[in-house]
Amino acid sequence: MCRHLGWLGEPTTVAALVLDPPQGLLVQSYAPRRQKNGLMNADGWGAGFFDGATPRRWRSAAPLWGDVSFASVAPALRSHCVVAAVRSATIGMPIEPSASAPFSDGHWLLSHNGVVDRAVLPPSAAAESTVDSALLAALIFDRGLDALGDTVAEVGGADPNARLNVLAANGSRLLATTWGDTLSVLRRPDGVAVASEPYDDDPAWQEVPDRHLVAVEAGEITLTALRGHR
Image (cartoon, rainbow, N blue to C red; front, side):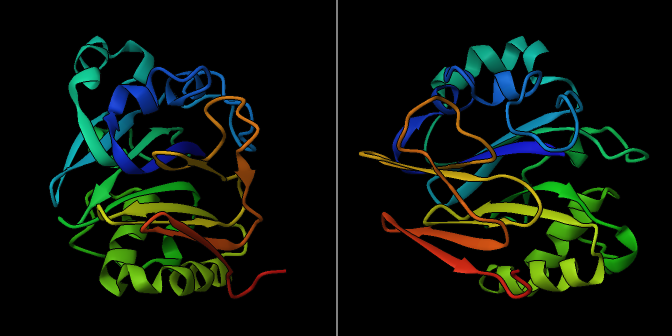
């Protein structure tokens, strides 16, 4: 499993979202509070943000807590849209920077928390890595993010053991699914945060039910039950 976070709103620093919160991704890399599978996320990390309409990424195969270079630069990185993640690699999957989310097609940033049998995913030359999350990302990019809910439901139907919490953003939209793991949403005065688990104890965090699609756009939050919801 992994942990991820998305932000859409007023520009803020990557550090303010990832490193500074008392239970942010930095802490979740070694002491997650709500993770259902695995005890820590030490197999890499990634931080993506939008520079205007262009997605930028910084990814590593090392634990987030040990990257002093990122800690020194993150306070200077500001964006209105951020997708970041820490990784717990599925057994047998390679640990390499290209296996760490967020993945990108040049327009979207995408993270996957979970696991899926690669046998149910089509091979793709566009996949950034051989790991299941990269193949899933390639499939989602190929089908288009407007079909995210249907794609997740289809893959979940093909692999009943799959966990398919996906988070994606393109600078103006933030989309997420729950399928087998936790997700929470926080509406702040300056924007909306979507995260695998709350990064602080603000009582305004709202837990998203399993097998739902979350869409954030123009400050509005919409929840839709996914096909196959039970």
